[in-house]
Length: 285
Length: 273
Image 1 (tube, rainbow over the protein chains, first blue to last red):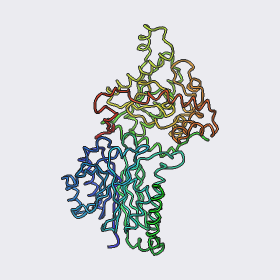
Image 2 (cartoon, helix red, strand yellow; image 1 turned 135 degrees about the vertical axis):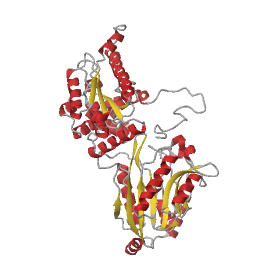
Image 3 (tube, chains in turn green, orange; image 1 turned 90 degrees about the horizontal axis):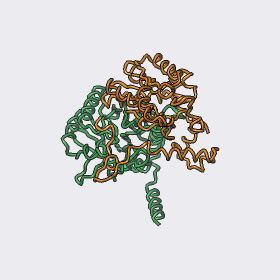
Image 4 (cartoon, rainbow over the protein chains, first blue to last red; image 1 turned 90 degrees about the vertical axis):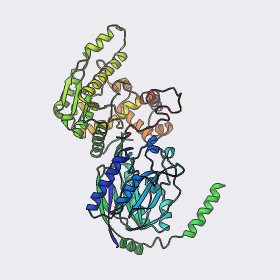
């Protein structure tokens, strides 16, 4: 099936309250199912809230947790992307996104780039992921890149060469600055530039699910969006308000974009690797 | 280099959302705000009324015997325009009763005492009305330390703390606060004839431009000077920011245990909200 209805959940999770957030996920999934969606994408750390600080260990879940079996059950009716703090068997805590489908966890992405500057403090509380992998979802070959992962083009580049047709980007982006110049935050405008550029450069869909709400005075700005492989925005949620954004994506659009702009065909993995190896040697020197 | 401006429609939306969200998370539905007659507290009241509805906003006017009658008129104007509930509580008896024992005290001590007297009244009304105290300190005065610790700086939530004074004026105009309030010379009204700008020694317009470069845009001192500001002025501003750092932090705790509040016991204020 080349056409597929997806839903982006621009939700407002409660900080550190798993039960309340689980109920929010279930309610949102019901609405998405009612509107014909086959996939619901929730924002970064959707089960826990974002600025957790020392709450991290109290809300962390191993992948075998009964709380996740409720979501696995739900994924028999709709595919789900959810964000959580994953506790590994070694008791390391990861900012992770799960892709759940047909009662199973199909893919886990552990956020690779943990922002620790300005308003952010993730490396104090969380462990870094070390894998960027695509996986097969019903909508197509997908990669999950969580928030800051999107600010490192190397991550999207690796995923692209690994077969990515769709970027799923769960985000919890607090708005900052730039209200002197424009109708939204400076970093929101930057995000919109990145989403369009990635869609165009990697001839892929970008499904960007950002949250809303406030934590300790910081405002998550929403503005979730779906960008087509042509780089054109297809659907855009409001800023600042809760919303379920529905869009129809079509794998034929990826094909058409790649015929029009065969950028992936012309990628030079050998050149990239050789030059990166050289840079690595020279930087180390 | 112009003073920092604002996209008012969007900022108003963020700030009203902030008030609704943080008031509800704290388990309240009402706010109480002290109205001085100045633009800051007027703007807080306007934002509060826009966010929660006029019926959920209480304004307290707390004049001292030397307070300017114009301040009172302007505060009344806000109450009338917003149709919010209000009360007038004269703080003269409480403040004067205390200073009968300390007649030699100067106007700074008296001014601080008045600000703290008002704070105790606001927080008493917070309990009485089941209403959160809405803050009125802007970013300029917080950075300069131009406020009374545990006095006018005290609140439960503060929608104005990341807006410079010049931005407060801009948003106040956008929200329709009467010109007379927005345009008059800012004053703590703590003694007769006091104005902020005379006391500080520079205008808000000037200092906001320096603070914007220093704080928001991370300019180093020589870079600010190169941008066209007098070095002595820039250094004086930095000195004020440094000297008042303690006012922007909770009191220091002597560390004894393995886990000390705020140092290595770190939880968000919105924990579980």
